[in-house]
Image (cartoon, rainbow, N blue to C red; front, side):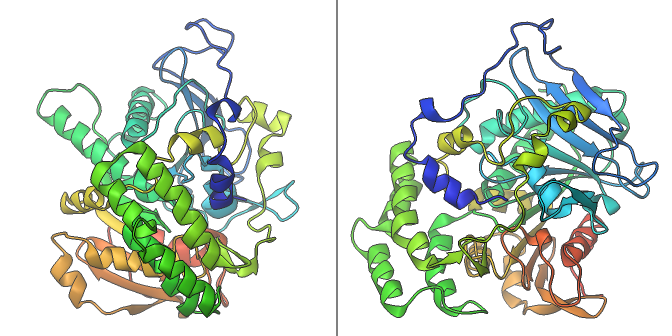
Length: 469
C-alpha cells in the first residue's frame, strides 16, 4: 500500500548514505546484466497479471546507457490495440513504483487482501488504452542505475529517452502515431506538468529541425489527487479538516492552533512563499518539513490521510511488496533487484521540489492544447478536493472565463451517483464520491471498484468531455 506521506516524513531526517542505494552492477555493454545502451531487454507474454486471451504484454528494461535502465510493463489494449491510444502511467511518491497503480488501482489485475494473489480487473484501463507502467525516476522500483535527480524536468529527460528507445524497437514502433497520454497521481501534480511541458518542447525542436527524434503525440494529461500549487493546497487542510463530507478530523482548538502556525510571521505560509520566491533547496525542504509537522499531520488526527473513512492503522490498499519481490515472478517479468513501493532515496532527493509551484507549467500545457483532467477522491485528506478546486479556480488559461461560469454537474455511471464534474473547453475536473488518494482503488454505492474511474478515463481518452451515463 502506498502511504507516501508517512514514508516521506520518515525519510526527511535520513541521510543520503542510509537511503537504500541501489548497487549498479553494469560496467559496459557486455556486462553480466546484458545492457545494450539504446535497446530493450524484455520478456514477452509472461502470462502474469493479464489473462485475457490474445492480449500482448511485455516487461523488462530499456537501457538508457551502460549504467542506467528503466523498468516498464506494457499491456496491449484489450480491444482494438492497433488504434487505441498509448498511456504512460507515472506513479507519484516521488519514487513510487508504477506497480502501485498497476496492482492497486487500474491494471489488468489487482492485488487481493491476502497480498499473495491477484484477481482479474474488469475495470482495467487497458480496456480502452495500451498501457505502460513505468518505474521512474531511477532507481525507483525495479529500475536500476546511479541517478540522483532532484527535479521533475531532469526525470522527464530520462523518460523521453525511454520513449525514443521504445518507439525505435520493432515491437513497439507501430505505436508511434497513436495518440499519447500521461496519467499520474499525487506527486504527479509536479511530474505531469513537467513531463508534458518537456515532451511538447522536444516535439517543437524536432519540428524545427534542431533535434532528431520521434515526436510523442501528446494529447492528454490526467492528474489524480495531485500536488501542484502547495501554497493554495496546504491552506485547504483547514477547510477539509472541518468541512469534509464525512466528519471533522480535528477539534476546533487544534484547527485554531494550526491556523496560528500557518499565519504567524515566519510560519508555514511565509515559508512556502519564500520557497516560491527563491527556489532555494534548503528553504523549500525546510518549508516542507515544518508544514507537515505544524499543519497537515496535526489536522489529520487519527485518520488515514489517504482515506479518512479509515484510521491510521488501515492496510488498504493491500501492500504489494512481497508479491512483487517473489523471485520466480521477477524472472517471469524480466525484473531484478529488491523491490520497494516507494524508493526512500528518490523521496529524499526530491524534497526540495515538493513545495515549489507547478501551476504555471500546468497552465502552459493546457494553453498548448493538451486535454487535461484533474480528479480527486472526496475521502482523500492528503491532497484533498478543496485544495485542488481552489487551485483550478486560480489557474490562468484560455478557458478561465468559461471555467468561472461553470457549475458542478452530477457525474453518474449507468445512473448511479459517482461524483461531481466541470468541463471548460479541454480542461476537466472530477470529484469522486467515496474514493481515497488512489481513486481507482475504491468503490461507491452499487458501483464496482474503479468503475467510476474507468468511465472518466474512457471519456477523456476518447477525446470527449466528462458526462453522465
